[in-house]
Image 1 (cartoon, rainbow, N blue to C red):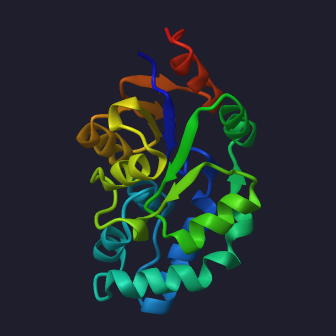
Image 2 (image 1 turned 90 degrees about the vertical axis):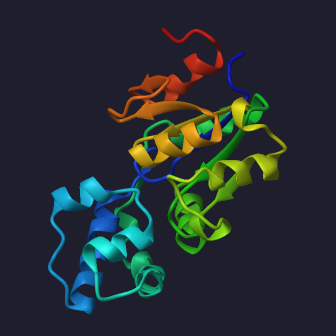
Length: 203
């Protein structure tokens, strides 16, 4: 049976926020007296938890310190984020066809919600890092999304662009579609290719 619900990662899937995150992460590096973060290092770490950011980039500071800085300053760089082409209409079309959608993101809700709203990306549920005990790659966000929407994990297709998304889906028992070069049960080159999985026409 094809999946009946789709849970999307946010950064790198529904929207491209890399430039915004690179800017705020380097602003934090200046604030905390840490070395500047290269584009390559930021790419490799993109999508990980704030705890992992703190350990990797700001080792003398706690995840709480980093979260506080991100939440206070991300809005200064939010205009650098852009929606993935076709993502907004995809969510609208899924809503029209009765397909449940959620965004599951290691970003905190105070950053994720206004960012999604500004780009007209409106899922049925948003599960952010502060909504669960353990961020991705733990499966907690998928389980919480299923609880909110009345679903079972095996009914869900997770669409993500990182190993953290892939590992979370595997741990939850959900199918996984890799986006942007990441492998999985399925791979999609364009966000709208998700329809072929839902329609059972994926090749």
